[in-house]
Image (cartoon, rainbow, N blue to C red; front, top):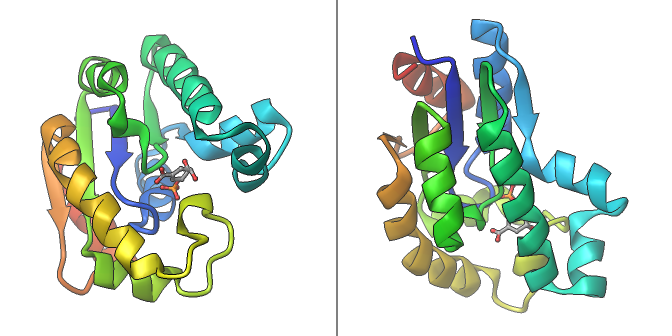
Length: 169
Ligand code: S3P
């Protein structure tokens, strides 16, 4: 069984929820990158984006992922949706984690789930669905590039996603 696994996918695809369930089911440590970053930055990600900009956020994200990829031992890692944008991060994911799972969801599904979400800085725009479609167009190939397995469900439930993800560990 794989005891080091990373979850990638768009914002709202369920990485944190599925990661938590997987970790509990297999009794593995769970690490949520966004949560770790908020602790480290001493602010919410949304506030940090507004005050310091996306580039600075990406630097911290890259540094944290490099550390986690080097950290030995079992881990279920939930990543931020933009982690795959940097080549160095894609390499760290492939090399540092035995199994990378892509939780794939369409922009329309994501929109339904994120309609009332105010925490995600990249979606605070007039037309969040158009933004999600643009992010998806750029990122879907990058998620596919790093993933060992794609967890795909047309109408995903948490239990369904967890079950499919669990079969890959
Ligand atoms: C981001 C997604 C967020 C967070 C940051 C940037 C992105 O994580 O890392 O707001 O670029 O898509 P989630 O995927 O958990 O929302």
